[in-house]
Image (cartoon, rainbow, N blue to C red; front, top):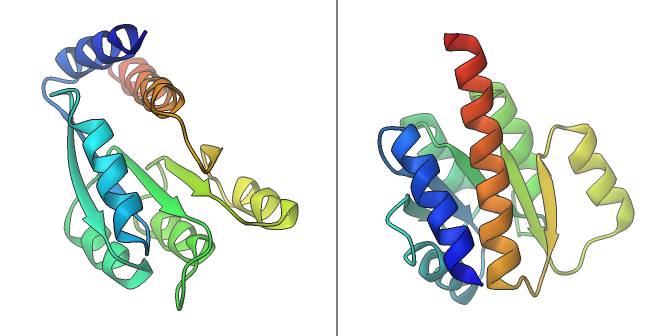
Length: 148
């Protein structure tokens, strides 16, 4: 079943003229490593990771990403803080919230602030890849409509 998502990501990367750049932000190392390993199933994605919100904001200021995944609940700078900074630095960058223990209110706020989607931990590999495919396809359609 994963072959379908991996193939779709590959086709999107071809039309993108190269791999998509993904930033994974989570304060838990095993989560960052797991999602990075998910992405290594396809050459369509290059991955950077950030250990917390401050690290993420530094990377976002230095590099343009096609998608940022961010944990909602983190010490010091929360996922909402990161989302707010991303939207100030590069408003068109999609931000996917990944959370395991947040309130409905926080998820609602993330949506109001411009999160492209929310996934709940534990995230299944197929669901994660399908969501990446959706976000990257939407990004390509937006770029294509501006070029055409």
